[in-house]
Length: 59
Image (tube, rainbow, N blue to C red; front, side, top):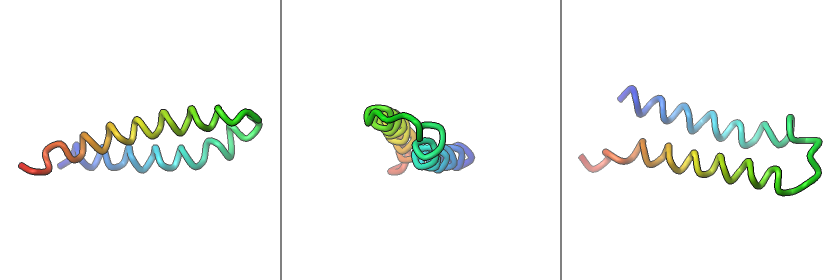
């Protein structure tokens, strides 16, 4: 149970980072691929975290 809460908190932090970073630290980057790379990496990390949360769901 504690592990699932940790993964859930990680998902929330990643979602917040996906929203905050492009409008703060990356706001001076004019190239579109900066945000695309960031959101791609964060998306993969969220997919992995979702897998970790739901892998024991049927048991």
